[in-house]
Image (cartoon, rainbow, N blue to C red; front, side):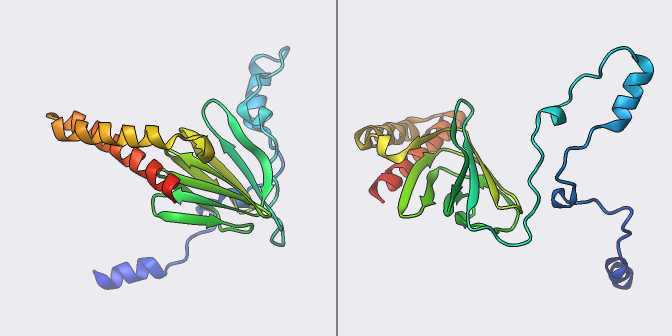
Amino acid sequence: MLRRAMGLLARPIAASGARSFSTDLPAAQTADAMFVEAWNKVIPNMDPPKTPLSFMQPRPATPSSIPSKLTVNFVLPYASELATREVDMVIVPATTGQMGVLPGHVATIAELKPGVLSVHEGNETTKYFVSSGFVFIHANSFADIIAVEAAPLNQIDANLVQKGLSEFTQKLSSATTDLEKAEAQIGIDVHSALNSALTG
């Protein structure tokens, strides 16, 4: 059994069956030729509908050398905090710990936990509190940060944070159902992270 497993592991993977990575795909836009061909057969006198690819800008190619800046997009469901901003570094609160992202970072996807997102530009540092979300780091020194909720750290009222923390602590102690306990625990986790962010 072990010999068979070792043989399977040692066997080279066929290039034709291997799935390509997104970094291996061409940077230029490509039309869905099969769809357009099928559309033209059925409805030759009408232009084919636009697909999502029609509205997307071509992905920048992966540079041959590491650029000096990291390009960051930081978006919320209702706003765009940073759009193609070139920065020196960002530090994100990943579920695995604080993660610093510099130009040339390896392509990564990480889940965000409640905490402080720091954007470093020269001598200036802008800090945001993020509740949760994801960060997508691309091989071409682009980073997309998608947060469910975020606020600049200097706009958060420390007194309201303390009040919320005590309220959720009381809710947890008086909770009777699993749902009430879970909701109270989430409130405590977020307010504790807010409190830690403010006290530094």
